[in-house]
Image 1: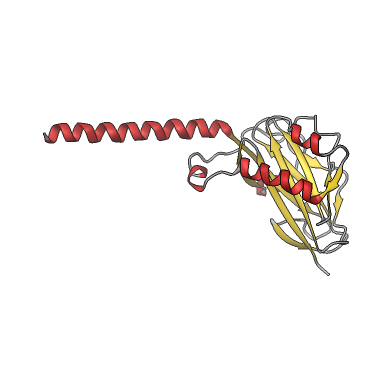
Image 2: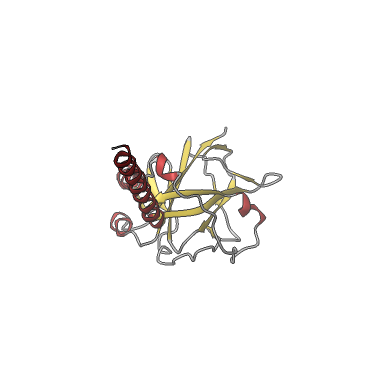
Length: 206
């Protein structure tokens, strides 16, 4: 009798471990992951912005994205009134895995306008083109409530439960081909399910 119970228990443990292993492997295939950093210039030395940060009006910065796999990147800026698709018209260019892409470019920067008390920058990485973006943005600007509804949909879709984030840590393989940037070693790695959504909230420092 004890031998039968032991066999049943052992079979249950092995079965549970196999299910967990298969689930983790399948989930890992569905992950979208990238190194992302917002590099603030004009400070000595240049520093990486925090997810919630205070910036003076006129502060300049660049957004850096290094995807683990080929993906499309969408950048949206909101100020409480309007949402602007920053790389509108340039979204059909896929970023290769391991490539460091700098927005707006390696030689230009975004500027904190300071006209509103807070600006938000949303970075979306997706392995496929997002038709919803083109459907919402007939041009590069819409009123913010329309964008908020779509953004929340993307956030919910990309949400990764805490227990699943522990399933498989990773490191982005390959070398950064586009730029020799020493800061990219300090960029944080972010993950999402099916797509990745990362937000930066910049409060205006008066």
